[in-house]
Length: 489
Image (cartoon, rainbow, N blue to C red):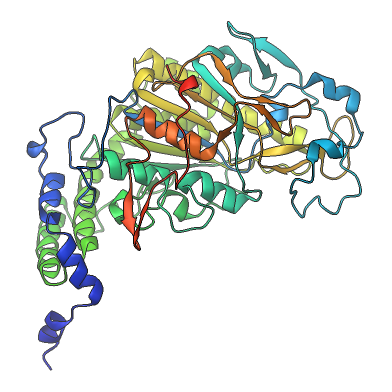
């Protein structure tokens, strides 16, 4: 049989239903590739060809974009934010059974004969107009605490890293769901046709990554179109793989190649109707435009020395957390909807005092600089900045306990995150923990509530931003989540 004819006759069940369901696909693709068709600044492109636009209701957003500073590995709130001076009297005494009350703990400490209490060795002071307690580990953050909403009772059900970080990033402990950035990209589209709507930055520590592995599903699109997944920018070589033209190919040749490839893909789409073909065409075009936009983005030579000094000594070293925080601001300036900045090595089961001092030394100044930089440019009001990890660490010690050294195990309840800008009320503390920083006693905030609130700041009703997959409607907050209005301006 003629192979071309055979290929033309092949139509899978998926292709058949894809053709029936995506008749508006070419219109959506045209809007992606022709900026002159955009009639509204707030939404310069159709959010997605799949979205039920009649059901997707938005209201006036406070935030246009999100910068999410993710501390992978779970920083210890006891040593940074949750001041418990009364614990000094409990040093090396066992955590009362009435406090734990049979709650689940990990296998890393379940075999311990004792659960000795380890008070923080770090000093705390009040800062800001309302006297928020902040550790000596965060001197720069302490100076801008009046800009923050400090959330002290965030909680999750997950107790190990992979399900916990998957849960807070995608709304499910099981892999396969779209990430928060992908949902935002799907719902709101892009504000810059030359950069992705969702960008991911990975930060090095002492020249490497280390810590818990981060999988692509954490910024993936799940069952959404792949056009909504996060694009990782690298700190060495091409910021995006294969961004540069290969030897012997100039810009004109690449343009002609993409035009011919688009014709082949369009022909294939007309035969099988697979929407991923459209995504492929759009991504090729985005990659072409990024050949100009990304080098300009990553070139910080034009930044004033005063701004570089704001972020600290490491800002000129690509891949560092400081450099990525500055890059996040530059991405926000250029209309990127969702920027995720990861930094690992917060998983401190032992030698915590030394390790957390190092980590805080890396992130403290750049975090404060980012908030200050956005504010001085008039961007903080419509940029939502989020800081935090996947859970917290225990009040009791893992391993050997001394006054100078201790470790802490995983703990899913009452951990601290902060938010700034983008419609969040500044200078507030929301949520309270018990005397042992073990349980929530006031204003709990589940991670579904957190994600619902983030979407609300962006002008999105989290219950309506849905996608039908395998016979049911999915959303970032699953079937849960309440907007926490008490922290909104």
